[in-house]
Image 1: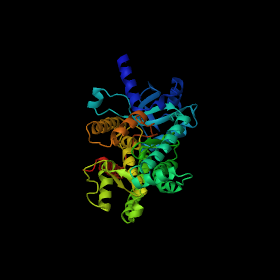
Image 2: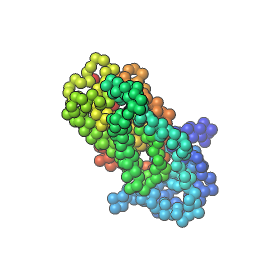
Image 3: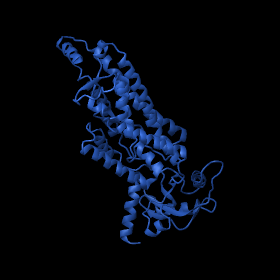
Image 4: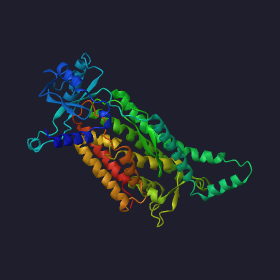
Amino acid sequence: ITDLEIAEITSFVESSLPKSTRKEPVNEEDANAFYAEVLGLDTFNPFGKPENVPGGFLIRGENKVRPKDGREEGDLLIEALDKKLAVSSVHGKVNVYYILDPTPPSGEDILNDEDELPVLLITSSDISPSTDALIKTSISLIGVTSIAIFTLGSFSFNDTILNKLSSAMDTAGGNVDWFYDLSTPLALSILSIQLAHELGHIIVAFKDGFQIGLPTLVPGFQFGLTGAITPIRSSPRSLKSLFDFALAGPLMGIILSLILLYSGLELTAFMDLSAREQLPSVPVQILRSSTLGGGIIEYLLGDGLLNTPNSDDAVKLHPYAIAGFGGLVTNALSLLPIGNTDGGRISLAFFGRSFSRVAQGFALLLLAISGIFGADESNILLSYALFAQFWQREAEIPCRSEVDELDSLRGFIAIGMSIFVVLTLVPLK
């Protein structure tokens, strides 16, 4: 094998698997011990010796375990290998994954339909992403501050509130507790949607027995929060488990967002004039950024409400409605197929590692074009593209088995969520 081929394999593997799989490379002695003590004709029959790749070793061969009792062969193979690994000399030193070949295929492999054949990947026992607690805490504090700024800013379009605040400030010992009572529901509603999102992740991780880290709240200009980064610290059992984990968060967030949006619009519609005058406001330009969200607002509050010629005009809405609208958009953004976002995880589970990278490139290009050529007047998509490119472009850690495909139900759910994302993120015309 030439130096050029080695460089190509290294580049291909490093782009397919995250840096955390390479933080503690496996030594050849441990790889050979795994080969000799764990593999066999009753589990995985190797075709050759372990091959060194960045961070670990690949072992090519044939899975000898067959589906049983409704369980798929990849899951059963990992279970059988784990039992042997537990009594081997490398227990606690290495871990094994059943994945599609992450090395670049040759032309002959593609012609013979032998590209991306299942292989075993051997890594160190710890592939959890490295995080800095101080940085995470600092960013989350900025995220909380961002919610407060957004909440206060939503009242900056309301002359009645501004005049009342100004009078209170001019008066010695002026009481502004009434303003905190007005603004608190919006801040708490935004946080509640994100908490619902995280609760969805926690439920699936607990059910499927893998570890996740504490979420980092990510500040956002348009809605107070862009979302949160929730790292997976130990590998899910399968792509189905990864899919369920990635879907559960946005799904819980979307459900609560719709409830709050509808409730807030109903409260707005039946509110008396004096109470409505004290509501926070959102620029029409922001509300037009979502066909689904804007369409719901126009359906409940009156057709044509958002068709004002001046996009800088603002619409007074109940705090629940504002938080619900923002929650719809931010949860839809989290479903875009980028890196280790929830959408990136769903894309990985649906398409596999190779094609999910293509989907990521296409999504980032589309977001950038939308922002640059004016289709995204509020810069929501462009801002998210920049955030995701710098903060969440890294691939997700491997599942224990990435060979068994998703079932049809999960496939239809993925298609349904894709339609939701398009309806939510395409601007209202």
